[in-house]
Length: 398
Image (cartoon, rainbow, N blue to C red; front, side):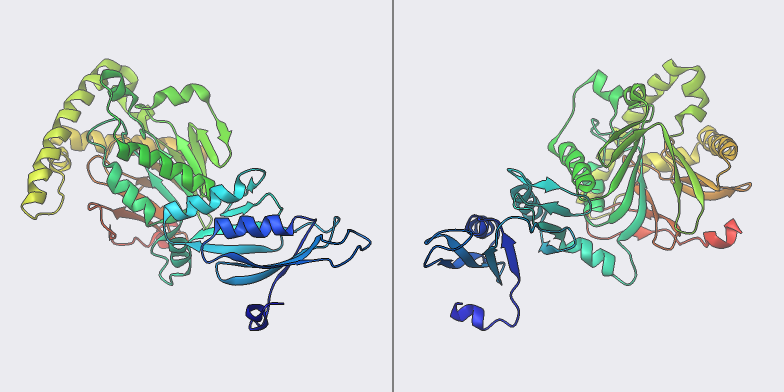
């Protein structure tokens, strides 16, 4: 026992099968403030080995002392015991995670992984624990719905959404259609690093335990030919049913099937899409100069959309059609996207929710831990949000 070990009140002893020294060196390479402090060898032959074999190894991991014991076979590690490592950056999280699962390790859900020696670890972003333990649960959600990101276009606010997802955690993340804009990418290729980062962020969330549900829309309709598929913690499906913490059931779908232009005049939808992109381009330059003058982001295209009578009538008809159709599923509400207008209102007995978009309004629908639903606005790539007033949905649901 070293002098350093004597000062510690408790030291975990880990049982290995003849590879305690190898494990100790591996942990010392992987984590900072880690080292092998002593290797104790047998002075003579014994029933499980011979003189010179390593008996115990003293080492520290992140400043915590351990003893590795070469106790022999038959006593494997159990999943009931694991070590938590808190990280401050995504790079740090990935570095530890990749080192542990490499060369025989194993990925497990919800931040758990297992190294090649069979020892379980939890690599936990500190921001996640802060979100979970925050008394107002502002950033810890049961579910988040986002739609109409339109990756592959210059008007996608991928950097805004990336900032939002970095500062929120959820059990489920619903991507409610038009996440990738296949229509635009057929016309011309545009894929900056921020769009790549967005895809990587979603994959990391799935790897760390979030259940990602990808619902196809009309702009990413190429996904529909695959039907329903499971890829680990990522589910690809045309639609889904979500149950809130207070027991209500919601139909989740993109909503383009209720758009009469999409159903009966697809060529007109494609033409309208190009006109809409032009309006968004004007909006992008308009806000470029607003920000230079010190004004916050403001959606000119959203303003015009809400002022044009035909657009208002279309939105109203769409919302009515979606709510009417959802009654067939015997649900309490519906969540959709498609029309780029965040909304939460009761239509007859159905609670209609639209998660909005990330090309104009930058909105998301979230479910809090108690089942409350709320629309969040994220119109600046900064660590803040502007929520709409919370609706007392429990009373409405009756």
